Image (cartoon, rainbow, N blue to C red; front, side):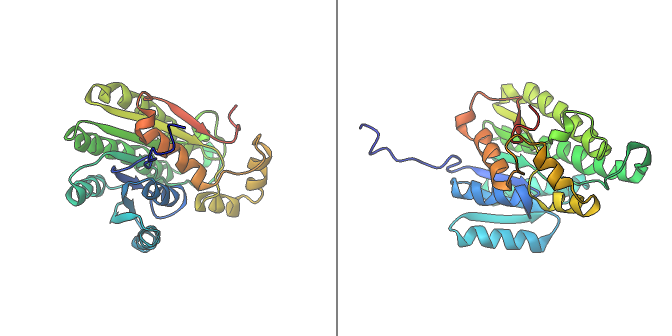
Length: 259
């Protein structure tokens, strides 16, 4: 009865949000969702055409969005993208480090050195540089929240994607260390471990290894792949003030596949 005249605000109302991998997949879904939840969104990715398309679509829905080109393999590009967010909005409140490179599926003993190096530069070093720059920006305004996209494949052996799984597991460690290090500065850091999710990355894997989608769906208790929006919903909550005492957590968003 007393609740009827309470205005429900968005989960991320008034927050400035930075999203890497924002041109497609989970990152693009997060851009739409975060904007609907009241955030001013800045999308980052390598592809300008993808960024322009997602930004235009978010604006068409009435959301506030802009974009900046960013190559996670290049430290200066990453630092420059975070600086651009502060330049545009004067602050950074929440960051979703979602961008990643997939490796060519194949066994550990056949993984080329340059493939391992590339996955390291994007999926681990790029996230490290991004987190440092984001935390620096957040310190200036009293804190914030960071969510890193890891993978169900980081939690166990990953024979098909050995370099990818290894770098994502390293990212889990970095996520927990960042939470312990930056907590006193009012910065919460969490990770999500999505299971099989209907993205371009999975489409590429399916093209290389036909049947992988059916196999993932069959091994998931909910009996299907996840949708990008479902993963973005978990990130939105972790980044919001509703998760104010959650830090250093790795949240499974996998339909029960890791249980």
